[in-house]
Amino acid sequence: MAIQIASARPADKEAVIALLEQGQLLTEDLPTGLSDFVIAKSEETPVGVAGLERFGPVALLRSVAVDPQHQGKQIAAQLVGQLLDTAKSTDLNEVYLITTSADRYFERHGFQPVDRQEVPTAIQQTQQFSGLCPSSAIVMKRTLIPNQL
Image 1: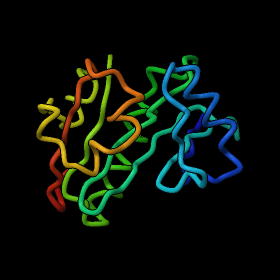
Image 2: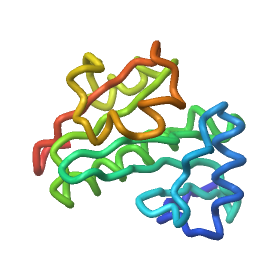
Image 3: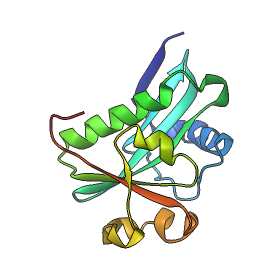
Image 4: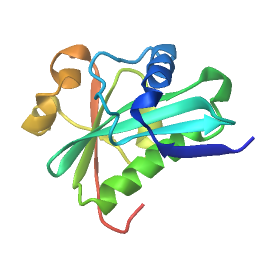
């Protein structure tokens, strides 16, 4: 069962919301066109999603979710890897994320916890940072170095 990863399209929004709700992740502030979101499909069935929100030289990695029946198959790693490759190739310097439960997972992808006060203003002003995620959530950062995975 091969997994195909492609850019998400507006027509995928309902499937994206369903995947995020399965993972108990936020859906209120999804971008309309799902630009910079990728979706993983198994035989045309959506099984995973992840997205980036860009703010100049920084971005917020968000909405990483995999259908529970497909977890443990490295789908999230593929989605995150593709978005990090995209981030590097488009001259982003840093990628941030906010998590309440997956900090150890994201450490494996080179993210490190940071103090909320150190986060760029553009990220602090996102709905995720400023209100939707609890203030107890862990904020993490990965500095991107071109040509380094």
